[in-house]
Length: 510
Image (cartoon, rainbow, N blue to C red; front, side, top):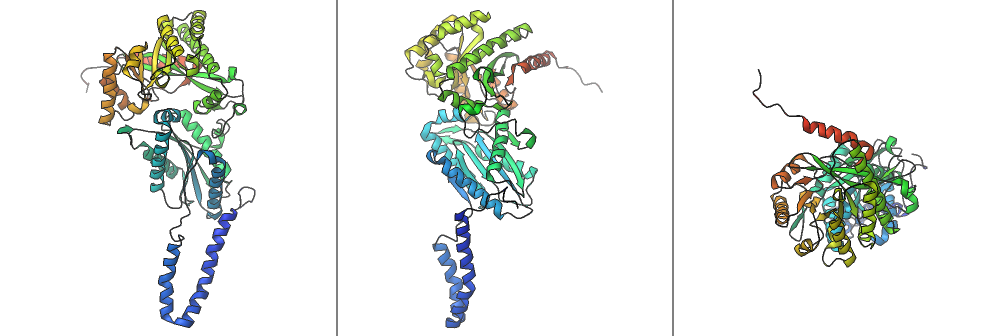
């Protein structure tokens, strides 16, 4: 084993090993002395007493495991602790052993955090932590390395291979997939996992953690419930996302921020009705960064309005591109933050941009988070939303069901469509309670003369039950992943061609 590839065991671990070794070394001497003084009865007494003393001292039940929770103000210290424990495990591994390290993150962490609040988030994390800890072996490591983010390390074994690692990743996803009850409501969560498999000579904990995180980044970009293994050929394509600063993004905001587009389809006709613009960052090295990485950094530096400007320009350009190819895409959805909506000049700016691009206002869907307008919204926000609706823009209330808005809020503001949050859509085809929740939202929307779009549709079963319940529009990875503009033209044409193919109906010929 090369000392350059692996840290030596920590001082604490060597100290523990020395204490245990000393006790084992002195045991024969102690037994001989007792036998000389007390005979066989003394040996029997030692055989009974020593295990009891060991148990009461806490050593008997002590396991080489790490089932800990990272506190927000101790990230650096506990991250070092995690690396130390992994390096201890690597140092003690047999020559032919292989180790698997997994990084897991719950999908749409910002949405989950917003829905649960600080207290609810901590409660859910503690309960998931307990689930993970209870299902792993005593010497495995499970460590919460951030909000809704866990790292798992399996005990090194000669049997570990890619197939076993994928099976373990599926098992970890199944644990997160089990419903959690929050204030009598069922909460369905999904997760994405990246993992790496290593064998001697090991490269050390820091490298393995970076590899697994790189694979997780790829999984997150691929969509909910994804699993990706680390491969060196893809290592340079994806950036680490644990700690990010503006300078780490490596690129100019005007050229690196790009809009990817996810289609929305009608459950009545099966046709594409629109797209939603989603932000991605492509840096100078060609690395793609997900919104979970980029948005907090831009928000911290007060660049959210600049982000919206870029997304709006690229979205209007996309409509022009689709029109030039006669693809008949009706609308484009653009997300507007609280700071955007609080801008007194927002109406004038959007009206000017629509006129400049020669786009009819009704083709722009202004997506507003429910939490932004819940309760007594700011007067400027209400004014902007109302004036944009009067201009002709459609107002989509995003993540409906998570922001505690009241019916009076919906009546007070000119909302055109509700976007039902993924948490209500998940497993709707399998869970009767989920079906009741969706049906209730749809019934309320119908009474208020509002359309509904279900987000996060991942399976054909979910799409089917939503159509049966009367949800007119759906969007999600089960239909298509977000894609850059240059890929949308071929995708739209291919999708529309499939819709034109009429299945043959008639008697089967022998």
